[in-house]
Image (cartoon, rainbow, N blue to C red; front, side, top):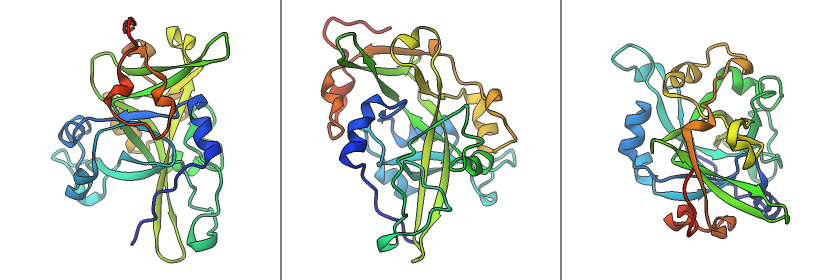
Length: 261
């Protein structure tokens, strides 16, 4: 089966990213670190495509971890997680085909609210059967200032470890036999000191919750346990990240004179 090419965000979508609930993140850890953290199998061709990225936005291909097949069982007999690529911006399987055998779908569902995802038509099937984890070394949020400007902040694990965003995925099948795998990141209301930066944040899961999440065990939103904001550190960064095409480690460099929380 052939894969669809990446769908890029429109100008309007790209302009909205900085005000999204979780609209930009980074992943620069190497394949060995990712495989070890998630206990996942990474195919050689996937490893070759994995390069450091410091400004991943909606409409981009992203690395995801999902439940493996029955053939990929680990030593304990349970299916081993597997890594794959998704398009960031969920396209439900039931979407009709449009011109050039591409999905006739204009919504960029790169976020889904934890509180309502289990009931929304675009997400409820994936909630029950197709959950995933999105590895990240951190993410960005934009704080609105009193003068109307927005200050970007970089959020990372306080212990320097990888983060795991809770996500949902789906597979769209084109009439020509092509397959487009896509995903969305779940978000929840921010708590604690994080609320002074942004009102919402991605759902970040603890390691002990990876397996039940991927196994798609029956679960209601109120039973999902996001990691508390206290497990994160955050610091302001330069506005270079506002450009969705900007890239490089300088994007996560703290502003001069600023300290990390």
